[in-house]
Length: 121
Image (cartoon, rainbow, N blue to C red; front, side, top):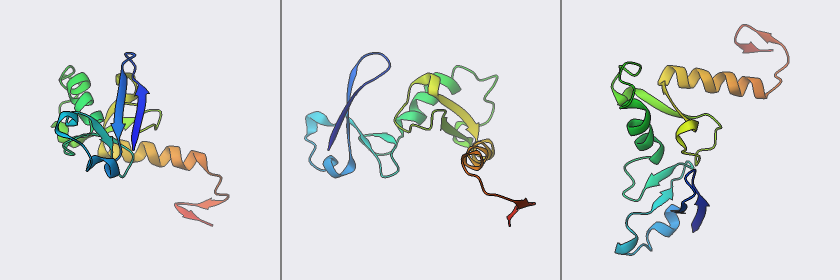
């Protein structure tokens, strides 16, 4: 299945789902697809588009801020849209920071009632 969208630079992009991936011809080898978790990947399947963009557009440009090895960072989509890979939507966080952020956001989305410590009563 093919999905078309206009990126932040006004360029029409084509993204393919994995089920359509097997039907690619060699001249389409540079197109991306959406993986089983809903993230955009390069056609070779190894790299997430968001990680590639964050590496070149955030990590490499800010070595004084991002002092850890790049593999020690998660890429967070601020608007939670896994296909929105615009640079202003991507943020580098450690795994601990990323999990904490999502834990807080998920907690805020639900009304659990009464709590006692970490246990739901």
